[in-house]
Image (cartoon, rainbow, N blue to C red):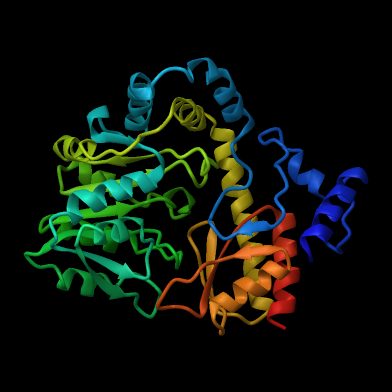
Length: 373
């Protein structure tokens, strides 16, 4: 589907009350009728490439930002403590354990600098989300990359085996990006505790909200025990605030002091108010999880139909074996009006696809049927 055809279709769907031009395609108006969300702006291309939540920000969060415009003339520093206190209450720690950042990316880069500038090494899975390790490399740090195992999980045994006196930090991404896998709860906790006795452990938990396993532990519990652990979380995913840029780190107060010295920007006033309201808006939170589950199951059905191997996901994306160079897949899908994935070397014939609105998933299916025919 060309971009022009898609815009025409969307316009027609709106005029006709959302009557689908595709068999089985849910009407757009049904998805947009939720009291929790506003009708989203229609992009020229469907974006299923960056693990965004297309339903956010919620209506309550949007109103909170509008109401905060009178504060936009003020510097944000005086407004951060209230948010830090809300986050601390949510995480079960005191506010001096919290670093509020401009998205989790700022937190990752802060740690990349603090621990990379020592010019030792950082141990990380390969492939994995690279903001922290790429930034550390700029300071001369060596990245000791450990390939994923045959289940597309972190090879915890090998990662731990490689720890030496040069190891400044071990980067643990769980659920993993890009594979979407989740380490067994006890195995993950035992690994993080052992590692934190030897060096600093960074637990990237950007997708923790999507974990459906009951009582699955955040490594915040190790922070509470005084361990050498930093936990990263974000408002970009389930809360739908990727464009607002706000996240946070959790660590021991003495570690927090080190990290605050390297904070580069921090959040703005509107982002702070958005995050506060997002924490209160439990209805939208549950709505987002429900929509993600439906879209993810729909994507599984598409991949099953096309007989493409995929990794069962604990996130808002799915990693599948495209059996061809991912750059070819990306280019072909753009022609169908859908943007997917990006390369994750060395797995360059695997593709990561994000979940979206159900009408997005139907258009993704139509495009994939052509590309993978």
